[in-house]
Image (spheres, each protein chain N blue to C red):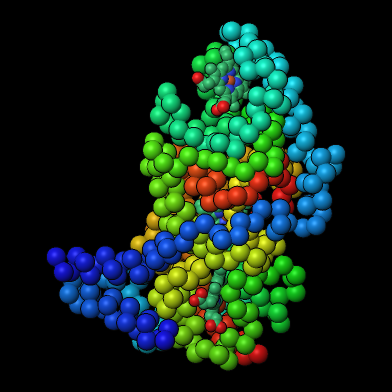
Length: 258
Length: 153
């Protein structure tokens, strides 16, 4: 018994599990603050923000009929700007029916399969990025209000644990960079708090809009950890934790990033 | 303060090893830690500083510049400042001290952000192509040690 305890303490010390004391940043800072002045200027002016192309495309997809029902999103929901105001700020959430954690991408696909009888849109397809961008845009300036109690609690707890878990061949936890090194230079990048309020975002390196899961996958690759599929439960749990972690930060999607 | 704590951790590790008679859990090859150093080279072949320089400065192999600057050596503008600049490290630290820091900095600072370059065990969720492999092999570690030792100013 005593030896077992010894091993636990030993392993705990070496893996840095004591980083777990971290909570959310006292002063939440939007990701744009850590970008170059050029990228910031692009993001703050809709006429120069390349991401707006996806928002526009999403607007037109909203009214396009699709699937066996021949219905459009608008047939059931009505005017995008009116009905989707503030919706993305409440996501991800636990879906009542499936009891699974759902982000905006998941919700859109759920409506496609269940309500339109159309095939789900693949992650990173122009269509899904466009619809996600258009819906998320309707929450610009809103403070996020995600539920973390009740049915959401296990997902939240999982997300926090993942954020604090050292992983990959480089043995690094999200919290070590996005809490411990904020403002420092990782080569050409300035490390931000890892906020999600600007996502989906246009990334100059990608020359494209990308989902939050694509961004997280880049960080997984960076630490040489296993890269999970888009929409993986672990990334969804992280998405919930990160949404909560942003505190009173207003949404700034679609962001422009290096 | 830090060195007392690290000695303590290493002490626990050694004690466990004696109790269980197993290899140390966090290093893939036998390494003898003395104080805050690994004095014995990991290979017969003496480290080659020129090769070490290539490893440190390359993005593909060592990628150390993501966190460290080496102002006298690298002309590249984008160097990181997460860790201390490496210029002069050969004057500050002994060869053995540098070796341990490359093998696994977390033995000295459990919260370190510097990756372990010669360790394969006790890691979580490692991408399939890297499972069972350390970031650098023994010879690469020795080459980097030789290079860093040469950075006297």
